[in-house]
Amino acid sequence: MIKYLKSSVFILCIFPFVLIIYKIFNDRLGPEPVKEITHFTGEWTLIFICLTLAMSPLKRLTNFNFWTKIRRMLGLFVFFYATLHLFTYVGIDYRFEWQPILDDVIKKKYVFIGFSAWLLLIPLAATSSQKMIKVLKQNWKKLHKLFYMIAIFGSLHYIWLSKTIFFKPLIYTSIIFLLLLLRIKFKKNYLVS
Image 1 (tube, rainbow, N blue to C red):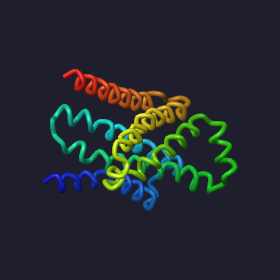
Image 2: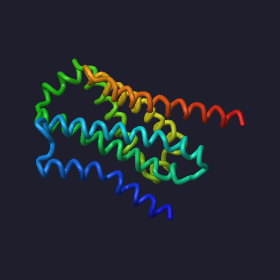
Image 3: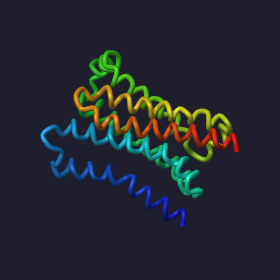
């Protein structure tokens, strides 16, 4: 049963990628296609960050282990969509012209924090297998706590990027902070009981 549920979640997670591919090949990206792809992949990265953070509170609220069984998969989809987001910026928008990209990383704080979040995702994606959990033992959990910092960096990236419209970025930031607070609250309750 869990196996089929995991497969269903995987299909749902790949759906945004299929949708953006469909839009690209059917010329449905609007007047600014690069901007549309960048925003689409960036927003889905944040959605998957929120979903990943929600898994532990959901497990504790429902007492259903399924949520933690898909957490790593959701985390890998964070890396997948974040990489698509970065590739759109580096490969499509800037066509791999490294000097202006480097200038952006140094001069624009939203680019710097977004790039930092992506860099922090690399060791998490690289150590997401069951084999790496066994190799790293207790250090695996310590390393994967970087995800909380990545979530904060991701929300800051969106806030700093939005020069005029703050409503959407603030919604994501609020959700991320609420999920982080829930995690702290659950841990405190768990330690007390």
